[in-house]
Image (cartoon, rainbow over all chains, first blue to last red):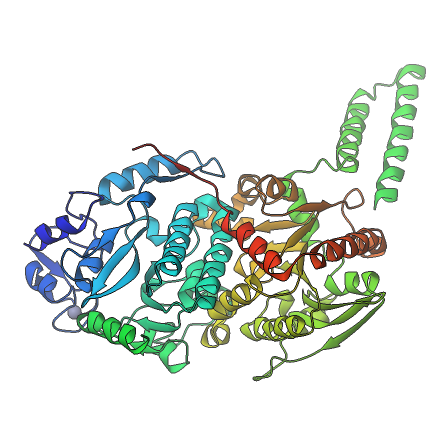
Length: 281
Length: 319
Ligand SMILES: [Zn+2]
């Protein structure tokens, strides 16, 4: 039943999302955090959150859209689905990798964008996809996000971006880096135009995404326990040659240090987004 | 360095001539030596023609004898006054800010500054900014806008510092905010990549109307070592990575990531030849300033937006 709903929401593919991050194989799933074995259907009824320890499982872009928008209200920007990278560094395996990921995930790239309604309130919504090259931002992701930001300005709609990303996309080198400037400039433009931008950080959000649009929300929300940072923990450990404190770079850590507005549980996300839109009308 | 290389080339030519004389006169076989010397000559000539591999450029960009931002500032501007502090907690010294002047034209300087010796490097955290450096930069950007001063940024960093406190104080947010502010600042911005322009820590000062890049500097998503270790799980393939990454000024001009290449003496500018490059930069800064100031400010800002808007070519596939 869940799958049927997902299908209706996705014009990109009729396939059921298959990635590990979303639906593990078989009827039962083991919680990464507490080890509890959970009946899969039960997990999905509970927003893909462990009923025992509140661990927020990684979510596919489609399931995320389905959780926060009104039924049948999400309309993907069809004009974005056929954008393809020029493979600026001529990486030989890269194009094959993209193709196999497209087949495996049923998604065309690492971000899914469109408009949808949240309790009747329309918004431009972008959702990044962890199971597509770790949500890394190449030229197509940068273009999709920038286009969506500009669409929010044009349509005078609130903008909501769910981030999940390892950062820049190595295979596209400097052109990937430049997407940070491109998306941040677009957010600045939306800011001038008085557009509400709610940035939602989910596990994990790192590197070039943290250091660009994701940190520029008027409101920045995060899911409980999400790992969020600029430099990866291993890079920091290698640099400072000491162990990192426990809880470092979690959403709770960021809240404590003043970099996010609020931690929101997945089951409350739609309602909180709705209220924030209403507060800013 | 260019004179140095010319001297070496002349010496080597002389040596080869002598070896050839020995070879013919005394019937001693020095053919191997001649071949070896010719190889060295060829290599020197390649360097003197500026025909360097990407990795050689990486090494030049990191040369501790390469001029730092302040070396250029001192040689380009008639006057410079450094001013300090982010107005929240500290004065991070990996970015230097201040006011400068050429003739009657005032400028704001925001510059990533590596140390010129060990002591300075420790003080400046090896040119790796903490968030407070970017916050200081942002303060100076806004001030520049208020007083209609063009901004000159100098880019030279291995990257923003990856540390515990840097994360606690919002490294990602600071970089993002720096680009955000630069992108619609109502005053001209010129960025100059003078050495290593690595990762978001470099790009934070790179959202500019005109981006100049020294011939042997590099600009990249991260270091070739880091790139090789992430992509191939093997940091030792750094030379191969440097070629693959397209991080040279020439590559980046081709990508339209930069606007102009500034020539360096053969083998790379060093501190004793900084004036040569500084005088080219001075001329270009004056010319570009004049050009940018002639634009209506709305045009200036919207052209800057379009410049970055168009970065990252993609294909629209037929369905
Ligand atoms: Zn659990």
